[in-house]
Image (cartoon, rainbow, N blue to C red; front, side):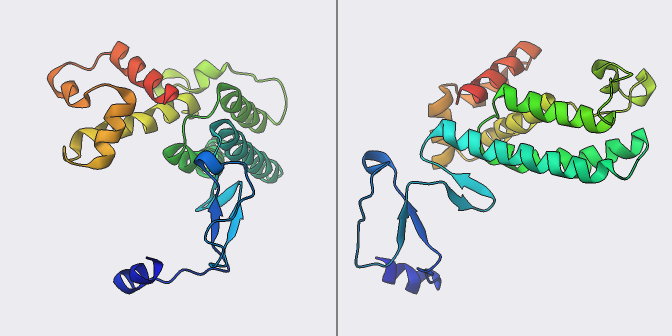
Length: 213
């Protein structure tokens, strides 16, 4: 089968760099299938395009978002030494801190609330040089016209990214396998949203659905 795949796709498997993750009934076991093929079998985590793949959901979230928190903390410490003004720090937060989590959120389930709070705490510590905040967070999130500095609100950004999948589901063709799978998981026909007004309550419902799935 692998030989046919190589012929059709013109791609060749690099067995020295290939690992296979135990999932399903063989999860957690040390068994090796197809021993004639010299590939490494592992129980995880398995690195793939910046994501650590694990067979367990809790482990998947813990490892990946713990890694994000560590990177954000390290970047904040580096930029803290520059003694930047408040608006300069907002640019750093948007460009180098929050951007660390955006990619993870697009491909992984929502981070646990405690992880989001930890990241927000690192950002606030960076913003005020580890001292007591002089302005309430609720004010900082506002626009300049409303007395704020447009500090990114991380929970809202994460929700917006998740809601972006609603648009993708709506625009996808009905015979798409991934669309049928998504609708089966959330148990709602998203095409019905074209026929109703999307209220705030509806948006909260979608947020809860994505958090649960």
